[in-house]
Figure 1 (cartoon, helix red, strand yellow):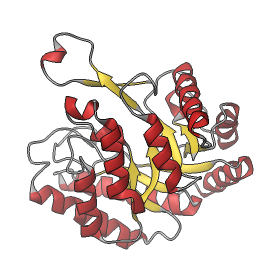
Figure 2 (figure 1 turned 135 degrees about the horizontal axis):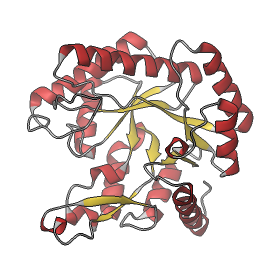
Figure 3 (figure 1 turned 120 degrees about the horizontal axis):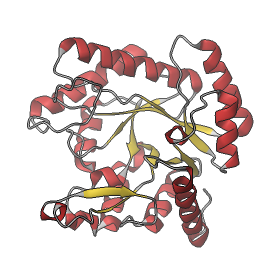
Length: 287
């Protein structure tokens, strides 16, 4: 596996050389792509060169927009962003362009996975199949994949729903960007992450091309505990069974990107990396 981090959470220099140098300083062997648009061909070439020379894999090119937006103009805009991002990923030979299934909630921003009562309807499922099929047909990626990510409030909220979408789209360039934390929906699942992780890999293994590595615990607020409330924490400080996670991920590929995200401070990423590396050493795998 190749451990990485979304360093843009704290590292604001998007220059490819500086970005890669920071990844190298932290010992990361994978990373998300720094911001770049389809028209920035010189920067795309610079990114590809910098990552290649450092032997760092571009694990994902991010397209966090809402392709299920019920507003036609916004839906077209977001689909175009995903299509262009997928084309950039293909130019870069990145592992994937990653996004979510989307939501029927009409936000006034680019929110991509907000709650809506119709998100679990058959029409929402068909909408995901439709937009993914059309984008893949239009872009025709040759070297990368379109990776969808599970999210609790979207039509893609479990390994089983993921498998259903994969079979319905039935395209070789649609793949799985696995984030098991996003499939934890109940307290029972929070305390059964070994079972959840195994179910994810058993169900989706042939399609998994990249992972997010996060951790989850419950809110410490007494008031919030009256209802289910989870919070992301530094890897190693929650309920995630990392021994099982890393064993199963390593069996997919020794070059599988596993990328930390959503941590606000450099020291949080360092702590998460220390923990993940310690578990990897314990079980005899390389990150």
